[in-house]
Length: 524
Image (cartoon, rainbow, N blue to C red; front, side):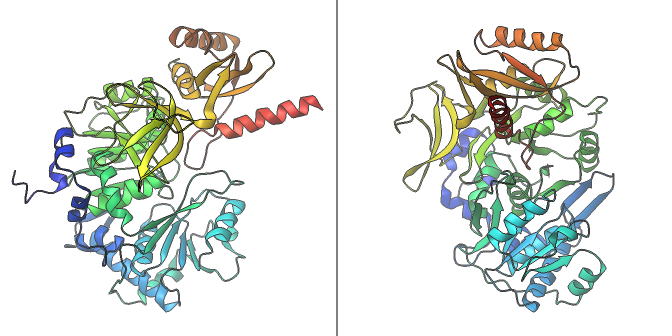
C-alpha cells in the first residue's frame, strides 16, 4: 500500500493501527479544517452525491421501517436551518430535540448545527420534572417534540415550541432548500446530558464541531467502522453511544447506519438486521443479554462481522452467547461522556487477542493508567482508579480497574460500587457476573449493606425465572464456588425489575438509597 495515499480507514489490523496512527491524520478523513468545519456538512452534505444513497434506516418497534437518504437529509436540514433564522434564533442559541429516531429528529439535529446553533438531544422518556430540569439548565430558545410530549413541554417562558405534524411540515416547506454554513471547528455544536437520575442533574457535556474529528478514534478502533459496513446501533439517540457512536461516526465516513425507535424487542431488532444485511453491530451489554434471554430468537441469516458493546462490562455467559450464537466475539468499548472512549478491543482486527472479561487496550495515541488513591501508579493486577492523560494532566474516570502484565485493562466497578466486608475489598461487577451464570437469573445487581459484625455484607437483587429459597441457596453456593467463600451474597432479594438509569444501566445508587431508608425507618 502506498502510505502517501492511504488514510486511517485503510488499516484494519492492530499492528498497522499503531504503526500508522497520528492524531493529525484524523483530519484527513474530512473535507473541513479547524477554521472551516461543520458536523452536518461532514456527516451529510458531502455524501449527498445521489438521491438513492441511504444514510439512515430506522427500525420501528411496531414493525415498519423508514429509509432516509443523504440527499433528503441535506435538503431538509437546510430548510430547518433557514427556519431557525426566520424565527430569529441566532448562532450559539440552544435548540432542544425530544424525539425518537425519525426524519424530524435528524433534520433538526443537522439543521441546528448548520445554523451555528447548539443541538440538545433529550431522552423521550423524561417526564415533566426531568424535562424541566434540563430546560432550566441549558435554556434553549426552541424545542421540537411530538404531540405525545407536547403537554409536558408547554408552559416554559420564551421557549419556541414546534410539534411534528402537518403545521410543522408547512413551515419547513416554506423555507429555501439551500443554506451556507459558517462554523469553525471550535464552535459549540451539541450539549450532551449524561444519564443521571431526575433529582440529580449531571452537567451537560459541551461538544464542539471538531469533536467529530476526535470521535473517529473510537469509530476506527472501538466500533471498527470502515467504508462498506452496514452499521447498527439500537441505543437511544439521546445518549452518547446512540448519537455519537451510532449516528455521527458512521455517517461521517459515509456508512449506512440503522437506528431503533420504540420499546426494545430483540426479535424486532434481529429481523431488521437480517432485512438490512447488518454487518457491524454496536449495542449496550444489556441488549445482548436481552437477546440471550429471549426464547425463540431466530438468528439464521444474519451477516454480522463485528460486534462491540459499551455501557457496562459484559458478563461471561452473555459473551459466550455472542461467540456461539452470533459467531462473533463481543469487543468492549469503554469510556465516559466526559473523556470519550479510552479503551477498545479493535473489532475487525484479526491480530488483536481478546482476553475474557477485559476492557481491551487504549486506542492509538491514548495513555491510560491505574492510579492509587495517592496518585501514584499501581502495579500490574493492583486495583486502583482508571485515569487518562488529557492536556498533560491525569483525568479521573471515577471507575476502578486494574491492568495486567500484558497491558489489558479490567473493570472493577464504579468507585462507589466497591463493597468492603470484614476487611475484604470486593467488586459488585465480579459478583454479579458470577450470579448471572445461573440459568434462572435474568438480571442481577449487588450492593453493600451495613452489618454490625463485618461492616458491610453483599446483598444481591435478582430478576429471575423463579422465586424460592432453593434459588437463593443455589446462587449463594455457586458464587462461593466460582469466586470465594467470602464474596457470596449473604442477603438475596428477588425483585420484578431493577432500577435503571435513562440509558438503561442498572442504578445501584437507587438500591443503596432504598436500603438506607429502610434502615433509618427501622431505627425509628
